[in-house]
Amino acid sequence: MSKQHDHDLVISLMRALPQPVLLVDDSGIVTAANSAAQDLFGARIQGAPLRAHLRQPEVTAMLENALSGADGGQANFTATGVAVETIWQVTARRMAGRGLVISLHDVSDIEAASAQRRDFVANVSHELRSPLTVLAGFIETLQGPAGDDPAARAEFLGIMSDQAARMTGLVADLLSLSRVEAVEKIRPRAPVAVDAVLHATLAALRPRIAAAGMDVICEVPPDLPQVPGDHDQLVQVFSNLIENAVKYGSSGGRVEIGARAYQVMPGFDGPVVQVNVHDFGDGIDPVYIPRLTERFYRVDKGRARDSGGTGLGLAIVKHILSRHRGRLVIESAVGSGTRAGVILPVR
Image 1 (spheres, helix red, strand yellow):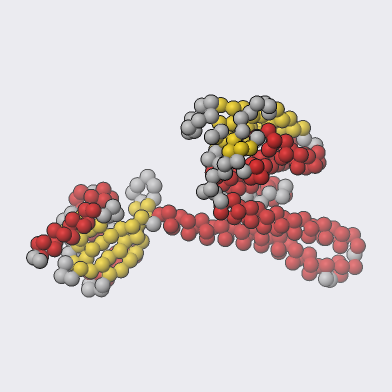
Image 2: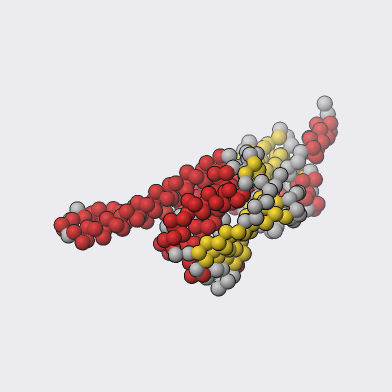
């Protein structure tokens, strides 16, 4: 085959590929670019020096090494001049007598997942370190002179019990989150009565509600349609939301729970059931609402820890509702309480 035929074949293959691909001669000039590469760099990329478009130290060093005769290389390039930052894995491979083939692969999701894992491990370590430090300190104290002081011993053991309970709660929520994520893509199909879920939830929470001195008013129509769901997971959803309302809305004195069916709801293909959990406490600034379902995110970190919160409750709620193809809507304002709405498709 002629060199021209080989070149035409390479160009045809490049055009068929969905990811950006470029041909670069030994001087670093782009001799060909497929449509994806032109969309990324602009139509003027062809005939331009590639160094001018990939001006990040790691990528530049990799390209210089490849242009100097190496077989190729790989480096990440971050495209920052766009609405959403994109991370491209740039791969250079040498073609016999034809310079380099440069391909770019979008690895933004992979990098984001890796960053989330790192943050998750760091957060778990931080959450466990504090109670462990407290426990270690009090154990050391009790092994000394304080061990013979009945009053001090009783006080320290009470604090140690609280810290152990905090760690137990964190581990339980971590296991729960893991179980929820494991089945998140498997949509539940069993019909579930929403009123039965709410009554079961309130029955389990009755001691906590009584201890907080809160009035919880639940008004649910008897003719609500059933929803396809996992009964236990939906109990977990409403347990989290009602517990939050009782803990953080205590200044309001009451929590109101209501439900209603809608035949039409934006974002859903058919009828839905919406359940609202409304407290009348201090509320939160709306600027914090988008982050409430992040793992370990707390608006008031000290208050949340003092009340036994792990920072994982709403993250668990989000994943459960994702499995049910539902939605969590939170509305709040400082001084006006908080309303958490759960929307579940009927079919």
